[in-house]
Length: 505
Picture 1 (cartoon, rainbow, N blue to C red):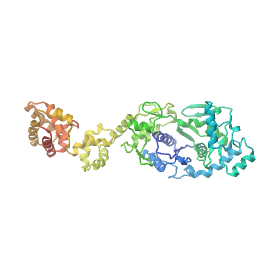
Picture 2: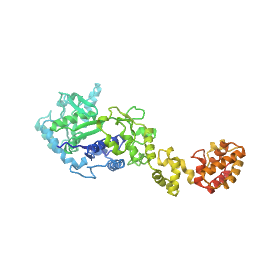
Picture 3: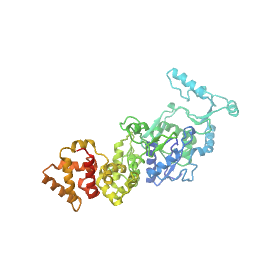
Picture 4: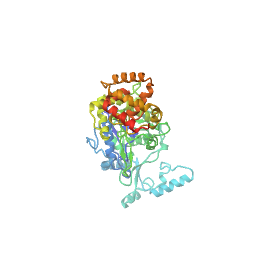
């Protein structure tokens, strides 16, 4: 095999893709692109009981949204297909046969009930039952039965599984790019099932055969697969194949750092753990980063720094920069704590990097949903006033609604604090002064109003806070005179009049 990089992202279609799964895909993708390799999407669907309709499409759409282009896969095709494990059923039979003939695997006829009985028996003695070299000769399998008995049982149609034979002896040693040299004691391993009674291989068997046949050079996967690593190495040896290079990624931890991040943490703390909205077959909807208003670039940037360290203080990376700087050697062993606030911070940075026009164009559909049609150049002006204050495009509405429509209600706390004594009378007089102001622009308005306040010998805060209440409905928003210029003289006077009518004297 020539020395080329071929990596695969191999999720199971048992539900939506979790944050951790997307990060695994991303690290595979970055490594591939850095090394001019091939990025393969393989769907591992041998566990048909856990198959969830729609999950396959969801996985592909998630990768697409993140900007990870697949080179070979069920949609793209390629010279190493099929890329869906359930369509590779016939391939595995030959390899199981090979292991059986070499004495590296054996038939086991123990029923689920018999195995459960054994587990209970061991549990009653405070022990854990392991189907391994210490017990297998006392079980119902082809190592304990004669060849004739084994053949007769198969011929009769007795259900069986095929188990891998793990013998005691030398430790299983392997080098992991992230974790260094690892050593496993074969005595701690059980004789795993490689082939199930339904005629489908288990994950372990299919995974090894597929990685070999697809010429996978590097296996980059989550650390939850570390306990399976010695079995996988032993399988490679049993077949006489060269194993790929392994790299086991650290876990993504809960925000408090205690344990692996789960869907429940997202529900509990109010942040998504999925890239896109996921609708369960029962109709329940779980939020996704896309629908929450995150930019894919911000989401990818945030994920890349969960466990990988560029070795500098740089935090903002385009996909191209990530590809250029990425290396497996700079991935940490320790788990990476997920910080939902930091995720928002990334989105804020990407929003600020866009031009005002781009942000305004993204804001237009939000306005249309509110039934507002506005001129793009006006929306640009509005956006330029408040863009630094928001993390998401959708938040612009709360910061700018008063530019597009008059207040329908007034903040009670502000009314209580600002709308008292001679304030209504002052607003009537101010309205008359404003009616004569020309040009009706921010500098002129500011100068005239301040002069008027001095002349009336009243407090600046008293007048301006009350005026803001009438124009905005609350004590928020950018520079007051900018607001007046933008909504115009007619609208300003109308809002003052409306407030005077609505608010109690």
